[in-house]
Image (tube, rainbow, N blue to C red; front, side):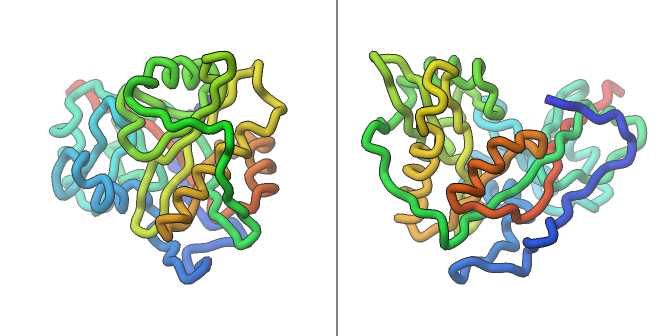
Length: 254
């Protein structure tokens, strides 16, 4: 994961062909500007910890934090009370103003992509449902392939599926954030031994099929430097909506 020591905070900006004003199939895309806050206020409210200024997922579910009113001057102190000194705060899309002495550990540029009418979801014949019993294998696969944060209880965020070969989990994908009217596809991981077989695409289309069956829109994220993955998603029928930033800061010890 690349880091940036630049003290100037980059902001999420629309890419030229996208924007919050654009809608697809009548769905409101505005919630995708801050999907963490929308998810924790809605579909994942039962997992939310915190207060009016700072909300988070349990530490073993997801590292992402929501800031319903990021510009509120009380936000830094609310973060300190919720996390404690020395703890890492992981942010997506929204970075609240923090005092100058707070340390930024990294900022990773990313891209948010949304479905287009070209996306053709369909079930994958090889896919099996994954649950709590499969977590050790899921953790092993994601640790080796590094698709993004996947923790002990991340599977509780939504539906996860995988492909087994000779009894071994070699590919997986699932659902993460659930902002109103949308669901994010995440944790797309394929073991090196099973790559170039179309498994990632097949699982993404299967997860998208389940999302569409609920009448929701499909979106996902990728690191900006992962141009291969972005191109593959665009080939499946996704389009870039906006540039985003994933960042992490440390709560000062004093």
